Image (cartoon, rainbow, N blue to C red):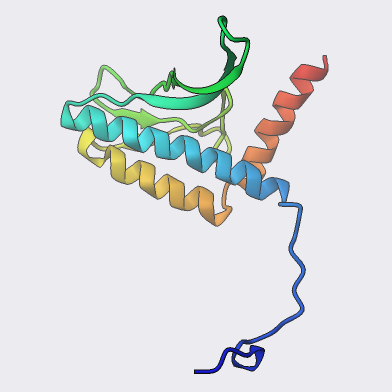
Amino acid sequence: MTNTLTNLKLVAAKRTTQVAVEVLRRQKLMRRLEEQVQLATAQLTGGSYKATKLRTVTDADTGENKTVEVAKRVKAWWWQTDSKKLYIALKYGQRVIELAKGKNAVEVGSKEELVATLEQLIAVVGSGALDTQIAAVSSATKAAFKK
């Protein structure tokens, strides 16, 4: 075995430093949907789900900054009506995404189908099918901050 560069495929490649805004928004929504899947799975199995995030805090005694894991509140995006129908609304930040004209939720047959529906929504978001709706909600959120 020889240790030369001739055995390797050499190319001229440039690493991209910027990621498209649409991709970042899509990834953010997919992460939130994955949290919803974990929450739904925990509720179906009778367990509990505790999401965590990293936070930098200053130690009172030493004055040193530390990164600690703290609990994060995750609210369910689904609800059940009096007629026993289950609905899921996708949220970007605190705003509900309008999936189609005048339609903001997905009807789910039963609680057992909830996880499968959430995973299907992850695939839909990952394919980029909701990029325009996510962009609309994002721009509406930005406009509210400018007022």
